[in-house]
Length: 441
Image (cartoon, rainbow, N blue to C red; front, side, top):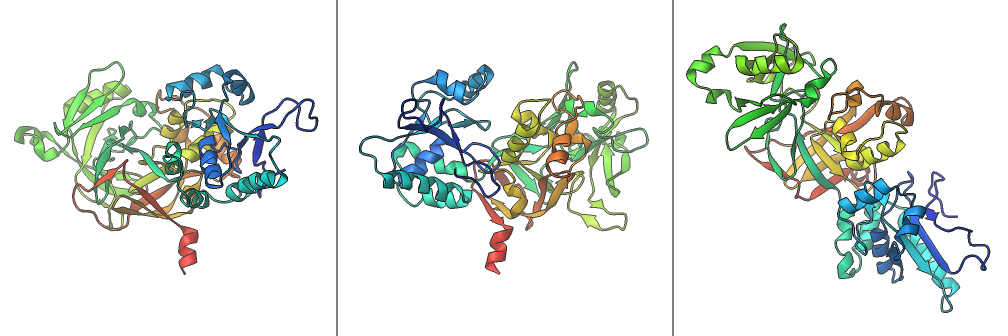
C-alpha cells in the first residue's frame, strides 16, 4: 500500500468487499488521495495530474449521490453546506471546508495492461509523495483541457481576507477587496483603544464582550461607526484634527501602556465614552485615539500601532482547517475558528502550516518579512461572535504540538511604503521559504 513518509495512507479506497474476490468486486476502483496529515486532495487536482500523464479517469459522484454521501461519510448538513457553497453536479468544486464532494474512479477492462496499472500507480506515487510546488510545476508542464485550466490556481497561495481591528481588542472590520497601508501597519488598524478610569487599556482577557463592539470604517464620510447588540450606533471622526475647534478643546491628553511600551493619545469625548460604559456595564471608560509614535520605556520609537507585537499577523486558513478537524468537541463553522486568531492577513495555501517555513511574502508590489511565530494565550478561547469562553482551540493546539502554543506568524513591512499603497485580495501572492534561501547560499 502506498504511504507517506510518516506512515499515513496515501489512498482512501471506497468499496464494500475489498478487491480479493472478482465475484464481488469488478474492475472499477474508486478512491481519494490523501495528504500526509489525512486531509483530502481535491479530485479536480487529480484530474489535472492525470491529464498531464494522459491517463483517463472519471471524477465526482458518478451519478450516484446517495452512495457518494455514504462512502464519504457526509452528513445531511455537509451536503447542504456544499450546495450552499455553489457545488452542483459535474462541476469541479471538489472540496468544501476540506470535505470532498466526490472521488476519483479508475476503470480496468479487457484492453488494460499491467503497464497501464503501473503507470497509474507511478503517477500517484510520484506526484503525491512530493510538495504542492512540485505538483504545480507538473500541472503547468502541459496544456490542460479548458475545463481544468483554473484548477492549478488553487495550489497557489491566495489572500482570502484582510481584517483590521480599529479599536484594540474589539471586533474585526473585514475587507475582501483592498485596503491602504501606513508604515506602522494597515491604515486604522488598532488606532484606538479603550481605557479604564486608571488610564489602562482594557482587553478581552477581562472584558470578553469587547469582541461584540463592531467598528465600521466609513472612509468617504471620514467616520468610525461603533455598533453593539441592542444599542444605537455611535460615531467618532477618523481624524482628530477633523473635530471642530470647540470639541477639540474638550479632548484631553492621555498616556497609557501597551505591552510596557509608552503610548499617547487623545480622548474621543463624552458621548462615545458613556456609550462604551453602557455597553460593557463599567463606569469611567474612555475611547482614546493614538496621536504619537509608540516608544519603549528606553525612549526608542517603534513603527507599530497599538497592536501587541507586530505590524501584521498572518493566519493560514488551511492550518485552521487542519486544527478544526482535530478538535473533538465544541465544533463550529470554520470561519468562526479563523476569527478567533484575529489575523490581519487571512491566507490560504495548498497545505497546512506552510507559513511556518515562510521567510518573506509579497502581495502585489508590497514585500513583507517574517518576524516570528505568534504565541497564543486564552484569548483564542473566546468566541468572537458571542463573547463566550470555551476550552478550544487552545487545548487541541497544546495537545497536538507538545505544549507549544504557537499559531500564525508575525510580519512587518520590508521597506517603507508610499502613502495609501494598497494591499489587494486579488493580487498575486509570492512566497520565499527558508529552504529556498538556504539553497541560494
